[in-house]
Amino acid sequence: MVTVLFSEVVETSAAVGATRSRLAKVAALADLVRRMTTPAVVSFLIGVPSQGRIGAGYRTVFDIAPPPALEPSLTVDEVDAALGAYAAISGKGSAQRRVEALTSLFARATAAEQDFLRRLLTGELRQGALEGVMLDAIARAADAPGEDVRRAFMLSGSLPDTAVAALKGELGAFRLELGRPVRPMLASPAESLPAALAELGACVVEHKLDGARIQVHRSGDSVRIFTRTLREITRTVPELVALVRDLPCTSVVLDGETLALNDDGKPRPFQETMSRFGAQDERELLLSPFFFDCLHLDGEDLLDAPLSARLDALRRVAGAHVIPGVVSPSSEQAEAVLENALSAGHEGVMVKALESVYAAGRRGRSWQKVKPVHTLDLVVLGVEWGSGRRRGLLSNLHLGARDPDGGPPVMVGKTFKGLTDELLAWQTRELMALATEKNDWVVTVRPELVIEIELDGAQVSPRYPGGVALRFARVVRYRPDKDPAEADTIDAVRALLPQPTTPPDLPT
Image (cartoon, rainbow, N blue to C red):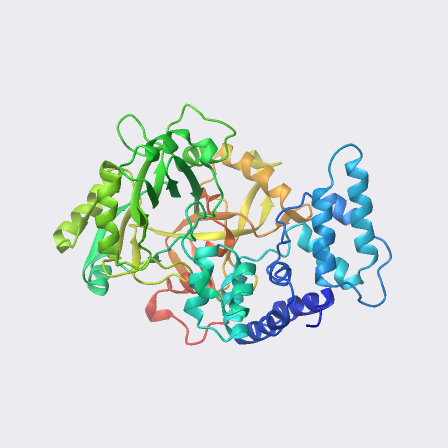
């Protein structure tokens, strides 16, 4: 098998970035994936070193500038090994040895390869929206059914591992494994509660909490807890660990939400819940769990069982910790669930088809969320310096929607409304750390932060590339529990256009 040159990854990445055609992106990626000899090919193409973050700082990476090689010679394996060796350097004198190791690697790279490496190491290549395109490319490269590839990715949580298994014809080898998180199933927005009930038929209607998604794994006395991005938080939530350890079972995998409550039982601000996830030890603020799905119970995997069966298992094991809701409600009962959720301080309700299996990946229609106001999860692309009392703070946010075909986020508007003094100070610190370009007016940032925006709708606008703009957008909160791959798409923004004035052919 021919070794893949690093330059081929660089050229393929450039080709994918240069086209807006999803089919062309898939074809270019599939061609290289089909010939790959190491899963690092997939890692590099989605903009993440196979080792994850290796500790190369922005200044260090851009200060290293040896003369570039004239011809490409580096292989993907050599680059991957060099980055692994860099990450392993520690101890006295490690800073200098790291600079020397990185300089040696850059000296063997061409100018285009050096540029790619800089963006890879600083996170500027990371593009979560490319995930869906890569899954299609893996399916095409391996001549495998797309659903099989997505299921393997749901269970493995790793695109490189999924690609290797697909090329070997071993997608079926992935199983739910206690202690290894499963990628979460997602919901689509509903037009309205009556519309969701009519579309889904037999369903459950349950509270949509203003909390943080968690996934709980228990095997005997061992308990592990993960966020929706599959980050482990077990050590910082001992009260949840103790609760799960006391459930009447020997093994279980539960999907749910957790949040901090006031004395009256209403949710505390979302940021307070999220502060526990980043804590180094237990805080006084206690979290309460509410579970809505059971993926495994006492040796039986339930991913392929209908939701009705999973709910039966959930009620047996989680008891009082099951999220409030009604199975097979009448329209009046469903409306009452929505009213109760809103009066309790929650976001709205979820409507889920009882025959649906648990499937991660593309947002399907078998789970739908109903909220009384329009909100979108968008990506921060840049921010303008404030004036007046906001002078010296980053204020007016540039907002982008996800391109479902794997391109960069599409700008759809700006807003400075809804920002508290505390949030202004926080976003100034965070966005400056993500800055890629700065001037006296605007700071451009890596598209890594997701923010929830409330809006009155959308309108046709030639001002932005997507042909649409947000109406009366205001900040609700940042969503550190989400990554850009989970942001709403430009199609979701366009769906908010008033139907009578929707143009026949918006730019794509």
